[in-house]
View (cartoon, rainbow over the protein chains, first blue to last red):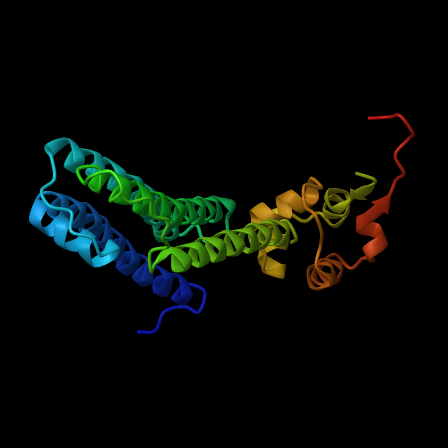
Length: 182
Length: 73
């Protein structure tokens, strides 16, 4: 049996929304898991730091690891914020409210969180370099400003999300006007 | 709003119920009710044409322009 033309696009949107929500949840688990897994092993932190900044950091103190972990929570937190907004966005789509302002607002919030995550990633990069090199002697400590590979992607994705949200808001207002014409 | 919808007057003249008109022209009774009360932003020519055909009237019998008095609510 074929579905009525009016309900077919919504069924497709619902299917995609379910998939997007599952991916969002998986991504959130991955962010939390990867951050914990990385910072739970000092040898891995040292290896990674050596790869990024090319210095031999030696052994880290517990305070350095705690501070580094706190710094890593900044982009992770912003990323989780973006994922939460996307989760809510697709939840609204799942409930059948598509051409409305509410999902557009969630998309816009997701965009702001993505940009914040990109900015926090740069800040985290600098903070980690400083924190992890504190145990080195004077003259060997690092003050790094680097742009992680996903920085520009995050910035672009966030900007696109905000722009699309503005388009959706305009579309929602047009749909509202259209609904008021009999 | 200075555009007054006189659909209820025409329905009374033709002794027709809103429900019957809605069914004949194929729009929801709720939408017809909104149109009757003037709580819509517009009317499609298509809808207007069907109403005029069913009620045997002109668009001018259904819609009236009544300018708002300056300073009046």
